[in-house]
Length: 181
Image 1 (cartoon, rainbow, N blue to C red):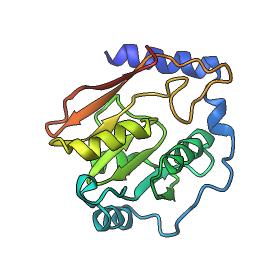
Image 2: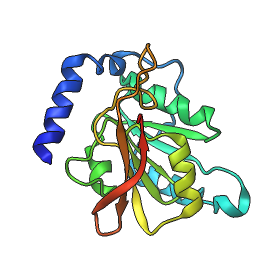
Image 3: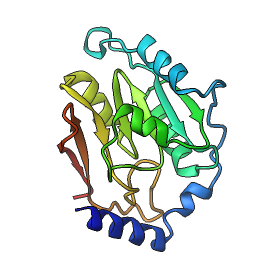
């Protein structure tokens, strides 16, 4: 499984989809004070029950300042109605470790919302579903950077099939949503 993930990531890199990360996004909001504890405090302070209030909680996104595809994913979240705070970091790995992203399931950015983590290019609709259903879980992951996922859109509209996975409290994963099929 790990070898397959590594091979898929290599194919993505060779295919040039990483070029999206080299683009600088248009005015992605950046909030000063990019410590992990400040981000955790921000998430804890704005984790309302979406079903009861109908409002969407703040999404705190930890990413590299120079990553264009991360900026495009932020725009996707904003267009879906989420308020977003961006924390630009030189190294996102400590955040991934703190929230419990499983080994081999990482991507280019990690977000926190409503007491869950969101790793990678997860569609906003899946995050809304997570917040409404509130399963006993750590969060959602989209390993790698699938072509056509939010922030990784292709000019021809093509979407590489990918699975959004739910990360259970024990760290195991199970399919949550399928896309591009």
